[in-house]
Length: 121
Image (cartoon, helix red, strand yellow):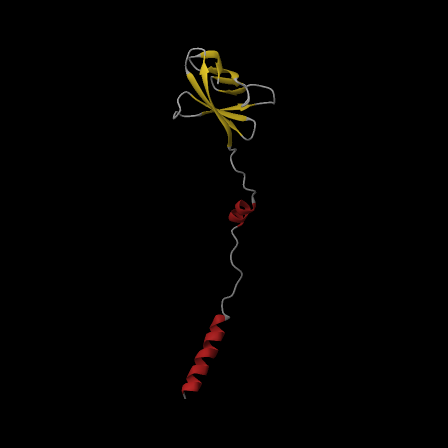
């Protein structure tokens, strides 16, 4: 009798296991996001501190995309991103301009309220 009850329970479980096996719903929007290539932000390849003509400091980070630098007036200050429109042109942002590369010892920086200045490492 126990065998019959156990066998009946197994048959019932197997029958129920096959029920309601429909295809899982696919969220097309989520699937599109997952299939997009992941683009990481550029990394910092060099950081330099420059002493400017008016004796102020400028902290510049050069980014790996070779189109962006960030400029800060203080070591822990808020960075301002400057971008280069075309190769060979200065990096610019609202009120800012920067000319130079990570290997240059002398660069030119224009900042709001300070005008254009020559700065060196």
